[in-house]
Length: 220
Image (cartoon, rainbow, N blue to C red; front, side, top):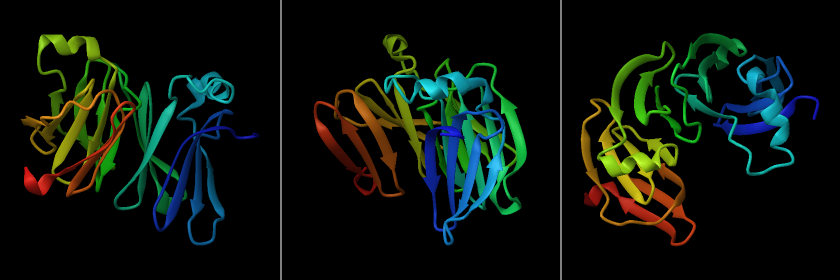
């Protein structure tokens, strides 16, 4: 409890990374996956959301404070509703760059693949950036028509090597993650999905009313 609330956690074969909120100066926790030893503690990414972090302990419906992803080669990217930060895991958590986001981020609509990250802002504009400098690769609007306006903020996104997959309402749509070109949508309407994930071959989604759905990119 001395470090606040764990708001997100990720890991790979080398690192475990936790993002905390509630105590100033303790946003990032990095462990060596082999030894399970804490190798870095610090950072201020979630300091503005300290109160929200504590609220998460007693109210599971509280807004998501932040997300964290590990990207190649050896960086972690943290997101809050107002900023994005890259830390170097090979240099004991040294901050590489911090980007303030004037239009915010839908915190549940972020993901990473290889050396790229994607985030959707409050206008439903998705931007793909390359880590560590966060230079923009492409951008696209996740809204395809006027009736999509009511779905603002109600979406999730995932990305693989080639595609960005956006779940908005009961629709799942696909964009080229390099050019930002809209490609197609899945025929099935699956209801309100809680989570969507993609590998280079498959897309999986879980919806409250209809359960697990799996699509094969090889058949599309």
